[in-house]
Image 1 (spheres, rainbow, N blue to C red):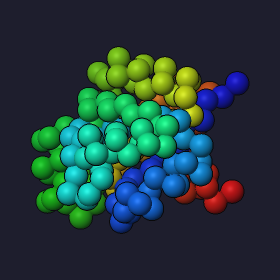
Image 2 (spheres, one colour):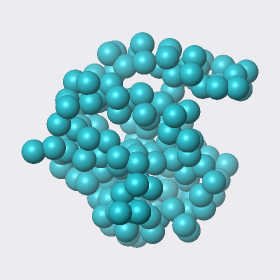
Image 3 (spheres, rainbow, N blue to C red):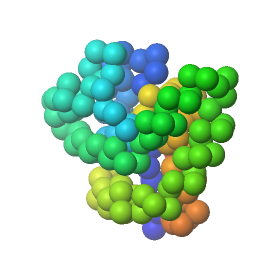
Length: 151
């Protein structure tokens, strides 16, 4: 039996519009894979997000070690495409196995969704994380939240 994990970014979203999408997709756990769970966007910082998720019975898990390291985040502003820093992130993933195991345990227990910032999955590390996990565990299937709620 396969494990399905949703993925999303909140770029361009308001918390008011974001939360109903999670509810519509029957998300039970939001797994935050940002290095720093803070945001200039109201409602998306760790504590505020956890509170609003509690109101709709969605669990929250922050796995900062699965986020993009600070040195790579700094380089992002120098680039027109995140490809080089995503390639560097790929190199770090074998060292993140304990956090990946926590993510997998959560995803096998709850209908889960990975959260990061970027709306464009091709420019976000969550897609690289998903690819790495799927290579190890072909039974784990990653799906865009937007694809899930459109069907």
